[in-house]
Length: 377
Image (cartoon, rainbow, N blue to C red; front, side):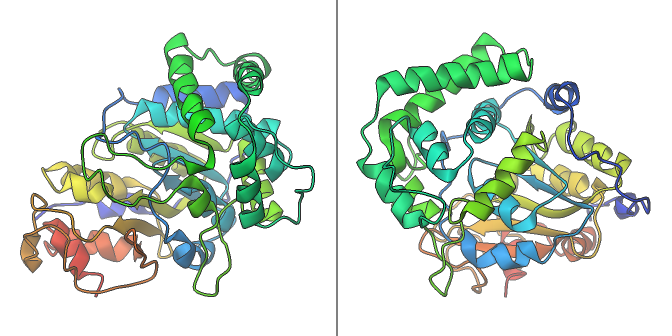
């Protein structure tokens, strides 16, 4: 049985003390001091591959509160969760340092772009039609981005602005190595435009991952687009968080001993509660070894309450190598025993309340990845 210090998750009863804006020095200190040494992943993962996120956004939004904090992983999908939750602060924790530099790039692009049209023009370094504006739909915006002609001159000017925004305006000592990585990422968005998609260097090359445009226009069951670019209001909500230094990238392993513990300490010190922890499918990889044990220890140490939820993604059809646990799903996740909110062709997303999950881990009901799937009946 895995012993979890569940008592450590007691919520500080004080009112939130986090200021409306994190100052530049504190932001950089959080980024540098909370980060662990960078790790690797089999994919570049510059773009998410989870098309089904609109279905779970209402559940995310229901967890909003004055003391809500958000923890996530990966690239742009976090922005749609942030637009729904509107947290006091957000931490994006990813084992890849390149993901942190991607979020610094995004931060600068948000801050430099007062509107969605300017954001897309700057992200892809291509001019967009002057007929696009605040009332334009996500489909119209992405169609405009698709027909825009990439401009190398615009790319060069935008990149210089990004660097100046980070190093001059904010005064952050972005290293040459990090800026090189940022430039490489920006080149990918420039070259591929709205057709850029999640890629895996040597694994399941034929999988039909959605493009950036398809993700930004993804709709719920009623056909309503829900991404952070679906409306000017959603975009401005995320831009406001970025402008106030409230979206902090951190290099960290979910099963590490530094990043999540440090984030939890910061949140508790400021009277904040983790309302949503977006974990994507990281648990699937952690169950290939013993990393899941440390992850759930880390999860139990965060300030949580009864509304705190973990959002995970499940991809049917992954091959063997992911232990099934007590529930006996030894062949990977194909044939998982149910469907829930967020089912889609590229997998499904599930909102799992954290306290019951930790209780099941504590009592030995979760010892393998298949046990998580059995909870989704």
